[in-house]
Amino acid sequence: LSSEAAALESDHRRMAAQLEGSQRQHAALVRDAEAQVEEAHADLAALQGEVQGLVGELDETRRRQVEARGLRRRLLLEETQHAEEEVRRLSGLRAEGEAAVDAAAWQRTELRKQLRGLRAQRSRAEECGL
Image (cartoon, rainbow, N blue to C red):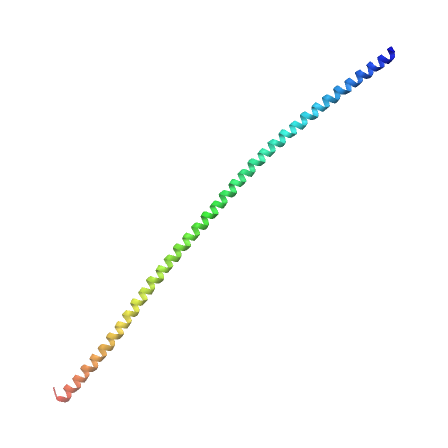
């Protein structure tokens, strides 16, 4: 009986030592897993920060694009308005020029009529001996 008790006692100590070793190994694995989880959380937080930064940059880029499009539209509108004003100004100058040409043509016609009339008077005067 005593040899069986000694054997059981020996088995018990051996099992206790194995259990203690397994518990230490388990604790080490748990610490490693917790460290990996913390590292994963830190990586996730860093990635989330990067994503937020990129989203901010994207929003800023979009805002600038909208602003640039608005500026291009305003500039195009201003250029169009200036071109239309220039067309109106040039059309007015053309109309004034055409009116001046028409007036000069009318005056030329009137002066020719007067000249013909004066020539006719001179001819009559020459015929009458004056």
